[in-house]
Amino acid sequence: MVLFDLLRRGAAISPDATAVTHGGRAASYRELLLASDKISRRLSRAGFETGSRVAILYENSIEYVMLFFAVLRAGYVAVPLDSSLKSEKLRFVIEDCQARGLCIQAKFAKHLPDIVKEESPVKFIIADGEVDSGHAAAETETLPNILKQVDESSFEELIAGIDIVAPLEHLTHDTMPTCPDDLAAIFYTSGSTGVPKGVMLSHRNLISNTVATVEYLRLANDDSVIMILPFYYIYGNSLLLTHMMVGGRVVIDNRFAFPQVILQTMLKERVTGFSGVPSNFMILLNNANFCSQGLGELRYLTQAGGAMAPEIIRKVMTAFPDKQIFIMYGQTEASPRVSYLPPERLAEKVGSIGIPVPGVTITVADKDGQEVPIGEVGEITVSGDCVMLGYWNQPEEESQVLRDGLLLTGDLARRDGEGYLYIVSRKKDIIKAGGNRVSAKEIEERLLENGKVEEAAVIGVPDSVLGEAIKAVVVLRDGVTADEK
Image (cartoon, rainbow, N blue to C red):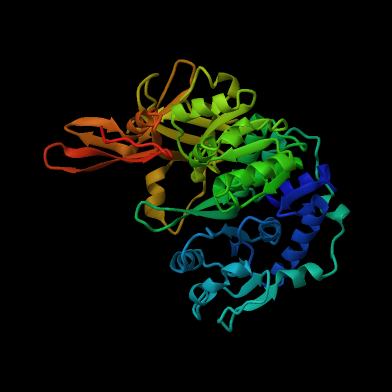
């Protein structure tokens, strides 16, 4: 099985059900599958070698989903681009991965003169409207023109052979073709040197993690998720893949700057899932209407993308006492999910990131790679099908995090007697003040216990006496005042 087969499976389960909604528009699985196949055929006619990279510069939309699966269908490697980046960073990514194709939304066409220059590797561009690349060697096609073409495959042909009855784990192993470890996508993240790192993920990486996430969230074709996270972000990509695999529904709303609008969308679309990062939850908790609304169809909430302070978790629990709350941990390098905290253990294990997701092995290790005793602090190391292939063109950075098939996460944690993990800090977030090792995370969590504090960040700053002093940057809640003391 390869990633395009996840869409085929969802389409076989829910052929005429809505797959994606956005801004009053909707696309069924039948429409999505046929459109992706049509786009893939046009991409194939560009004549690139199998495994060529195709970058996607689109905001969350139905078109993004079509293009993402079309790139995979054509045998190419998808490179989702952060649409908030400036031209020079976009150009770096395109040139670094030597993208031969570029799918671009017309609203981002202002970047084209800077990112597709004469020497650019880009030779073919798909845009949602007429654009001028300024680069004579780049052929341009519009998405509307492609979608007008007659279907070359029937829906029945596209879903033929898909088994929707077999156990999920069979999707990872029993039906894998000879190329499961072929590169499927490159997700660029910030690097320690300031240069973006291209995380290379294979079909096996992404499918195994998708299967594991579907299993512990118990997702089914009647599930739907409000999509406020960008698809170019690995967490957003995971939400897309999990729901496509089960024939569920993705409800896109790119207006999180207006929480009340998101709430209205959730109510209107009767979503069963909400997924966000800590800052999303902090913003929503400050919106009284969000917490007081019934949201009767909402079944679960998931949080990842950074540690959420125990005080914030308790507030989420209070706001949603009848919902399942999944606290999750992961990294782009792990496709991305590494662990989750079962909702039924949340109240007694607040602050824990839980236990490994199915198919993942976690070790808390010392600097020599040996597992430390229960209760002692070590680095979280990960093994399993989810571990990335490596970093594109960055062997030195890769060697620092991949050793003998193990992923060194850089997160320091301890394990309790039941095997539940608690992150202490990042390796780089330890402040050495006066010879004492201080966790920036621990100080942040204590600050957030103050009812007047909305957000807090703690860093170490040079100090002539202590070597490093602790500096806190605090955002107060609206309408309150407080002095430093």
